[in-house]
Structures are given as C-alpha cells and as structure tokens.
Image (cartoon, rainbow, N blue to C red; front, side, top):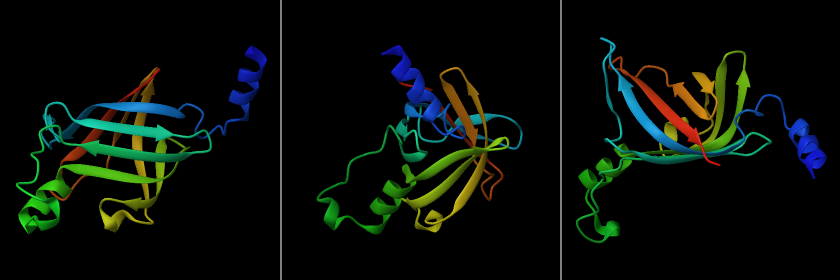
Length: 151
C-alpha cells in the first residue's frame, strides 16, 4: 500500500505536486499602500480551493457577513445583485507553478472579464499554508488570500 501511494505521488505533475488537495480559506486581506491591512471579505471569510493532481482547480470565496436577499432572489434589484457580486469571487480552470508564480488559466469566473484569462500571482507555500498576492487593484490595494490545506 505504501509503495502504491508513493508511486501515485511521483506520477503527479511537478508543477502542481505541492498544491494538490483541498484548502480552506483562513484569510482574505487588502494590503494598502502604507503597508496596513484590512479584511477584504469580512472578519471571517469563507472559501474553498480544490486542486486536482492534474492541475485542474475550482475556487470560491464568500464574504462571511453577506445579507440574504430582501425577497425572492429572481426579483432582486440592481443594488442587491451588485452587493452579491462584490461579496464573492469564484473561478475554475487550471493552475501551475511557473518560476516563482502561481499561474491561473481561468476557464470561467464570477467576474466575466476574467474568463479565458491567464493570471500570475506571487505566492508562498509554508507547510500546509498557502498565501498568494493578486496584482494591485486600481486603488493600489493588493488582495492577499491565505489558505490552509485540509487533512
């Protein structure tokens, strides 16, 4: 049994070997130009990242304090939908490590401008904690996502 597990691990693409598995979001921050940080999706954001051994991934992040729709979601107004969209981030595609960056090849995303895009993000993997930095937003803030590998 141990040999089978070891063989399976060596068959894993080197570019994703350290990322494969399920991860839970433990932090989502915005780093401001002055170096200070604030919560980007509330004090206790929720999220999952699943990475298959072949590099396919699916990611979801949700603001912990997002209020429900006032009524039937199909009859919600523009402001309610805007609030919903800004309180989440979801995308799927393939992920790899190239040089010192995580490379997301995004098939589809909650933000349709990301569909078909390739995004490179600086990252650190320390044991079972994965952290990456998204390129700066127009206001200069840098989003940071922190994940813990699930057993």
